[in-house]
Image 1 (tube, rainbow over the protein chains, first blue to last red):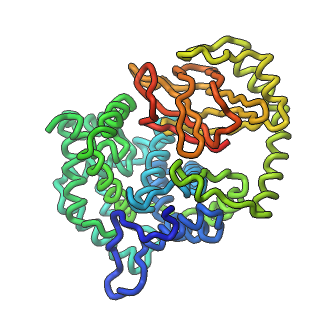
Image 2: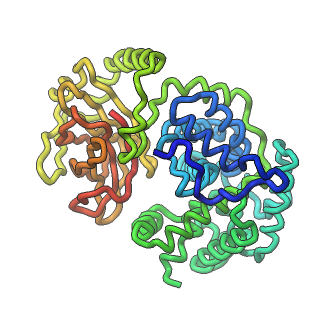
Image 3: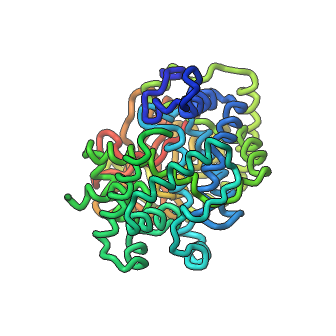
Length: 206
Length: 246
């Protein structure tokens, strides 16, 4: 049983600089998931408060619909609550776990229900880095946004477009290939290379 | 670069088509390199969220989610830890469960007609050992069991399915209204779990109004699960699609 074990997964070393004694956000989130797994609703509420801005942000960006985004976000957190005991900190961070689930569900929703509405008239080919106006920004978030934007800037334009079309546009690689007028194999490679470059630029800090 | 290895990025960004995703997942299960790369990308991709120019979640959403928690059955840890972390009988928990049971029973009457419609009295049998075939009479008997539960489940591939379970009757029925094809050369496989023991049960293909009895035994099981396996079924689950405690 790993209830109070210190997580050993990625993100483990991401203590905010200048606060050596405090647990990192990643560690706090792991503890909250473990407590949620025991039926602790207060812990779950805290988990929601710490993550919902980002999770809802991902879902909303893909769906571009307040109602759909709320529904999918609710589904995601219901799943997090249901599966809390199955979260394995050895396999990755809480944020990766929740965000992966959220993105997958948002994309599924786009592809099934809102295919027409959620596409062309919503997503224009433009780097997302240029339109940051997230409302939940504190100092930490602004710094993180700067880091990520900088990381994105280190990508080639095609890598960046392919990545953002997939992540925020919810497009398949086939659709991206059509939109960017590139061969499918090229898109596949660019997406992977882009993620590798972004990963290396950002490190494992979460 | 072998083409399938190159799909890690598109996989993590959910940019693969369904058939490509199935192929990649099958590959990843046996490829530690891809598995590691996917895990790393899963940490990187969500960091883009900080750039999502999106409104904050509506405050009412928080309240709605928290208000709904009592109605959600939390899954036990995956087997291996299951015995240690089973919640002990807390009064509040017992009360919650009792009220849930009452609600389940109250919807059963309605569910009987829905399910009967779904099953349509048709015969379904796709199992290797010919588990009993679902027919309307047997369904009614299962549904009228005092401890019958309908446990809905959304599989990883998005399919909405249910298990109808009666431990007193030692029987469980798997129902899928619109079960997508598990893929070429693949089958859905049902499992019963008891502590650390996972036992293969019936095999099911995709289709509409799919209904399949489990071989069981059901009464001693703690969970039932659905996975996707190669045709003919597997001895141990590889691509688990969903698990529900019973």
